[in-house]
Image (cartoon, rainbow, N blue to C red):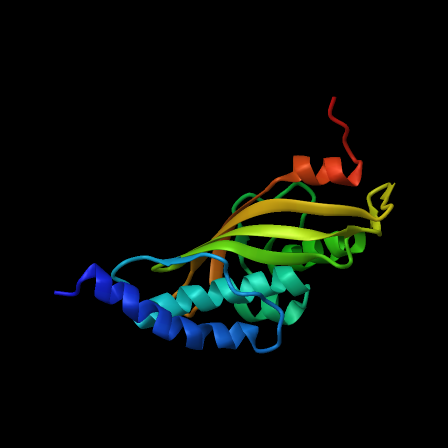
Length: 181
């Protein structure tokens, strides 16, 4: 019988090898906090962790190679915003559009939870609003807002579907798109 302590000690050993994959080109800082579900095999944990690190590298860098590597064409966005195309196309469209407004956008992983067939991240997006967002032109405002992403990972290690929740109210206030009194 494995003890909880033994599982806790083993996890960091293979975490280091896994992190090197996504970190090799410098597009993703390590998670500030990582939790791996108890009882996962190394292969199960690696599959979910690599999926998470790859998609979060995409959100951090905007480099389409990460999204194309981890999302199939028929990826399902479970809370697809109105006007966004479905599938991989929609994810690429959203990133490109947001980077038009915030060209220096960065995404850090504040917390990452790895489970069998699922990965969840609490993310912090930061940057400078110097571009355009709809009819609004940036004036160099700093932006900082949080998001939570939850992804299901298929047997092939690709992300099948996902949910996301962004703190748009904070973002839109910082951009001057909405005013709160």
